[in-house]
Image (tube, rainbow, N blue to C red; front, side):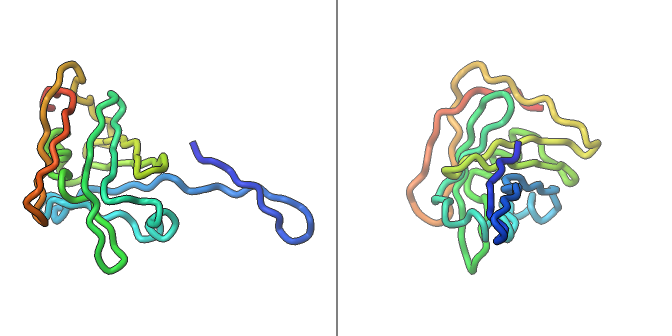
Length: 151
């Protein structure tokens, strides 16, 4: 759901404008090969200053994923932890993801397969450790996640 802001248009009358909080990405071969997904520049121009070093993805079954953000030359990618997210949800070329920004680096994510049908999300019933690979340092980030059944 979009939020609305009231703005004065200069003549004393206010109009409602939509605050864009969604973006979508179609998975391309390079995204799977490189293990990272670029966030659109227009989104970064609006919300980039709010983003920390980690992003928090929540899928409809309630499972939360932590993915490290990589920033370089004004571009930002979901990177370390992204490959694990793609593998768990069996993302393939043509998969479509809709991201809704909730603030504080948090995103709700809907996932559609190449047939344009929303996937059946893995079950969220017992703890499982997901390890986020960090190619930039020796520190590894470990988060306890909910178990999943591969798609």
